[in-house]
Amino acid sequence: MRTKDYRKNKVDIVTLGCSKNVVDSEVLLTQLKANDIEASHQSDSNEANIIVVNTCGFIENAKQESIDTILHYIDEKESGNIDKLYVTGCLSHRYKEDLQTEMPEVDAFFGTMELPGLLQKLNADYKKDLLGERITTTPFHYAYLKISEGCNRPCSFCAIPQMRGKHVSKPIELLVEEAQNLAKNGCKELMLIAQDSTYYGLDLYKERKLGGLMKALSDVNGIDWIRLHYAYPSQFPEDVLDIIKDSNSICNYIDMPLQHITDNVLKSMRRGISRRRTQELVDRIKTHNPDLAFRTTMLVGHPGETEKDFLELCDFVEANRFDRLGVFTYSHEDGTHAFTLEDSIPEEEKQARASHLMEIQEQISFDLNQKKIGKEFKVLVDRYENGFFVGRTEHDSPEVDNEVLITAKEDFLRIGDFVTVNISDAKEFDLYGTLI
Image (tube, rainbow, N blue to C red):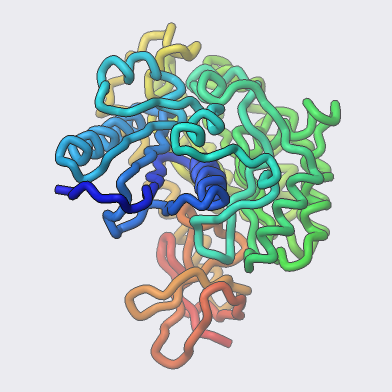
């Protein structure tokens, strides 16, 4: 049990969920340190007496993980190991009243847009002059750059607009300033993230300005790689394709969650796009830039998805051979449009469909990786692990895509450096290479 003393408070931030939450936690960490408050992110030292849990509330599994984490720290508080427990993020925003009733041991709950209130609880002032600065919690050589907040899309299965509000773009000049500050601290790669990057600029500039933003960021000294995530297929600004292809510092990579392919399911999902238009867009992207790695995400088990719909989705994935693909199962979320529909597909069937789709993708990934054997790639070194230096090509984003393993027997590499590697072997999601 913690003994009471007069040491200064120490705050530890625990982050759950997506990369957008990571950025929010980094902003909180930066504000606390600017107020001379000792703070850490997911520290293993157990020295913190104040815990802030940044929760996710997107799907059922994420909500349960958030609840379990809160309960863990409630136990820590009741055992005397911590003094204060605060909860913020999406789950807290969405279910604040219920959580306050069910978990009175938590000292306070805050929504996604209540950072000043949380800081006040932690005896810190909200410093607006820090808007272009951020302490990162990722490895120093890459960072997530959140270009907007919220979402205006009406997707039937998604509760994000309830938790994050309407789309709000961050001005280009502020994002450039943030990128410059990150570069000064050694960052070499930026992952552009948003709930919907396709929409960027419509609210501020009355036109889609994603391409203009990417051009401006590509001029920032020290940033070697810029990577685009979460592009919505409907009304995608295709000038971005030229900018990706022509720039030396923008990765040949796009993350575009398509979610499904049949007109029946796309309409039910309220995606605002048809099968024909989706296929035409995929074809144009691949034809325009054959070197571009296309990552997408599919959602299976949505209300109304028939066996025929699912098999057509499998055929679509097999035919298009996406470089990267992730699969989620439908989660019946209250407050969404899909919640008014019957969640008639059993969980076991949803999981079976997801597993089958990933088996298809594993074979596609293996086949594509086999074609890389004998070829040379520029690789960014992320870490050392189990006798290998582990890195990524421009076609791979951290944590979700392929990795390149380089034996450490003969060569010493520095984390954050770029090296040239010849691929000698390949598996479904890993490449093995030797240093050139």
